[in-house]
Length: 269
Image (cartoon, rainbow, N blue to C red; front, side):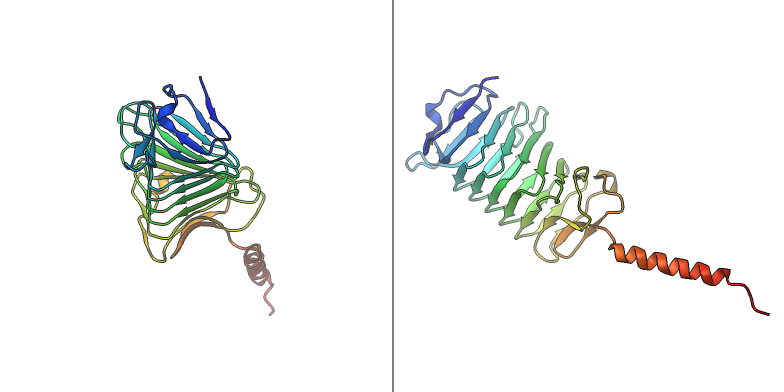
């Protein structure tokens, strides 16, 4: 598979690059994407003023990686596949990368099948508008460890074809933080893997405006791995995994032991 690497460039004109279908693109350095709508699977829309791109679209198996140290600024939004023909698309953010999205982020699979993926290995994802996943076809959003920052200025919508994967590192996992509401549609999935986790505290997965949660994940669509004793809690402004404090176990065990002693005391005649 061919790969196009863009390095040490402060201004990128997409129309000047010969696009190869499904070829990965890696962005290095500080850049603002710009260009005209054109062929290929990475498309930058033109706002009519100096060919400045306001949004990008990834589709049909395209892979975009934003490297450590890269800064990508978009005054509008990002569309990951969202129902066009072909395969899903992939966006990966490395530790130390930054993606600023002026409006919304929408991700979905394609009309002919395939899942679209966003993987947060780390970095900063700042979405000015709403974040929606799985509105038409399959979409998977994955957070690896606790090196990422995901801020959403609007609402988070987990639609029925979405999967949210939280793969805990030794210290936990980054949460998705929204200033707006959180909506969960029946059929949305939550997968949390604690295989690498060495902590023992509560783990926040989503944060949102107080009392703005609509819907919950169906029990059949929740998978917790290596997290014995944890339970999923829907709070007033967050969704988190909670485990009873060790002291409560000790206190409870003490009560049971004391009760057992009382039951076993011989009767005095």
